[in-house]
Each structure stands twice: as C-alpha cells, then as structure tokens.
Length: 174
Image 1 (cartoon, rainbow, N blue to C red):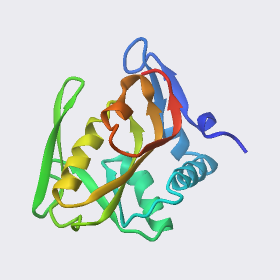
Image 2 (image 1 turned 90 degrees about the vertical axis):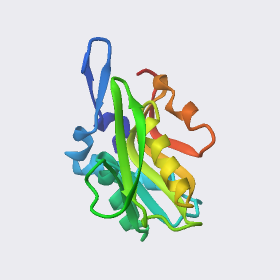
Image 3 (image 1 turned 180 degrees about the horizontal axis):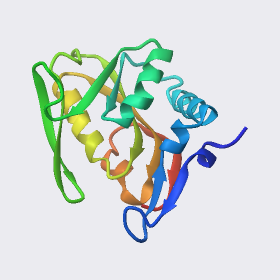
Image 4 (image 1 turned 120 degrees about the vertical axis):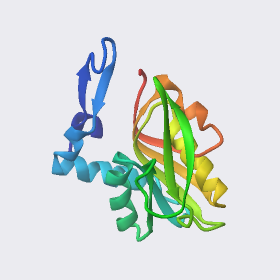
C-alpha cells in the first residue's frame, strides 16, 4: 500500500515562485488515496471522546462529512459569510492579503458539546482559530483539530498551541 504522501501532488512555484503547492485533488481523484486519507484522519481520533464534527468550507466538508458518518456523529459546517440561511455568529480573520469572514448557525453547537474540527490543511491557523472562537462562544469545547496536511513553516500549530492538533502529513516548509 502506498503512503499518504504519495497521493498528494506537489506543484512547484504555485501560486508564486518558491512555493510548493500541496494539491489535495490528486488524493480525492484516487479511490485508494481518498480511502487512506479518511481512514488516516479517523485514526487521529482514536480515544477521543466527542459529540460533533465541525468542518470548514470547503475542503473541511469533503473530509469532515465522511468522518462524521463513519463515526456516527453530526456534522456542522463553518461557511463563508452569507451562505447560511438562519441566525448566525461570525468571526473575521486575517488572510495573507486582506481578511475574510466565516459563520456558523447560532444553534449548531449546544453548550457542553465536545467538538472535533476537521480540515484538509493547516497553514497559518487563522480559519481554525476563528472557528474555535465561535464554537467556544456557543459553549462548545474543542477537544481536537485534525488535518490531512500541515505546512509547519507557517506556524499554524503554534497559533493553536492551547489545543490538541494533529495532522496526517507534516511538510516542513511553507
């Protein structure tokens, strides 16, 4: 069986010179790669007691929903501003060039619920930090955040140092 890293396509000099882009679509387009990714991420949750899976738009949905399904847990989406139809809470966070706003339904997390956050990639950790702030505002407790890939050079794990963070693949660069 191939290692998870072998399914990730690395594209040099994208989106700019000196950057190696880690393309998750090559994982999704291979049945064995997708199965290995979901199973590997599920393995990161062994021994973790939790009530709900939260996934961030959009690739957090791709990995979070099958994990929630396989573990018989509900799934809560964190979406870009303006995409959810009911009463929401929101957080603004910084991007490399500007800022963005994410939202979740105000009734999506119940006080005392233990939450796992799922996404494909942790880079700077800004999106996940904003998600954690919303979950905690609603009374939830983030017990773990899991990722398929981590760009260690962008120090997202340090930003989330007070939380249990785990990744299937860790790339040392940016």
